[in-house]
Image: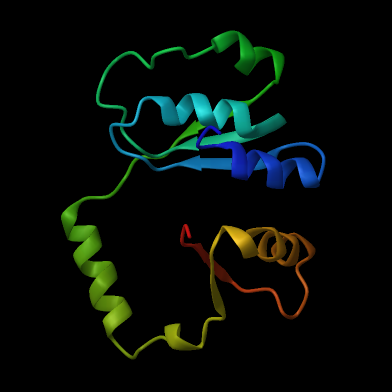
Length: 132
């Protein structure tokens, strides 16, 4: 079993692959390859993790073309921005504690993705996947 099989199986359940794959891994060259395999045709990959090398082994630019994938780069933030964000979260000026969030493992990932895709009243605004 490859590392991306659980996610691939869940996206097959909806029949097409992931609409958006966000790659935030640092110095993990194969993560982009996994993203290309997981994203649906005409889907979007957001690359926010730095590869750490100029070459991503086994990367198939042809697959990007065949699937008509959009790849978007997102520049990270610096230490000052993290410090400001943490100070804001620690303050009581905004009601962050009232935001509905759900923490799930792989067993419940399908149900939380289904809930988020439907956008009902019980949909969490923030979902976190913690591997089992």
